[in-house]
Length: 129
Image 1 (tube, rainbow, N blue to C red):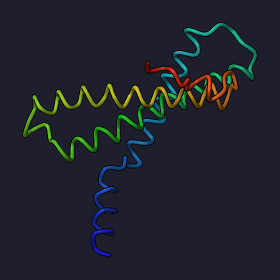
Image 2: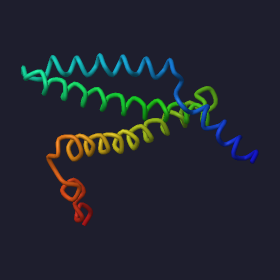
Image 3: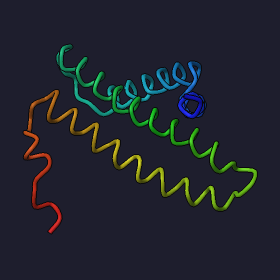
Image 4: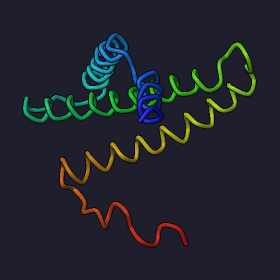
């Protein structure tokens, strides 16, 4: 029972704190509003709301993933101990994590919300030949 409690305690150290989540919420809201008003044509209010919620969810999901990754890397490889190693691992891991998160967000948006494609179209069998 003790290893389970210790593993749960270690996991809680890597999860984002409430203050970080609130900050992430407002930053993703501001960024999505910026992109919405600067790069989208005028739409009817229903479509505008859907676009805004999609953008907000996308930025929130990516920010959440990057925050968890940063907390994990801070715990495993502190900046003060191995700066160069941490920088290289951070860059590589951020690229990999963001690739997965953007692919996941696009799947949620295009397949589940907009129903513009099926799962088979989104994940074709012959992508790697």
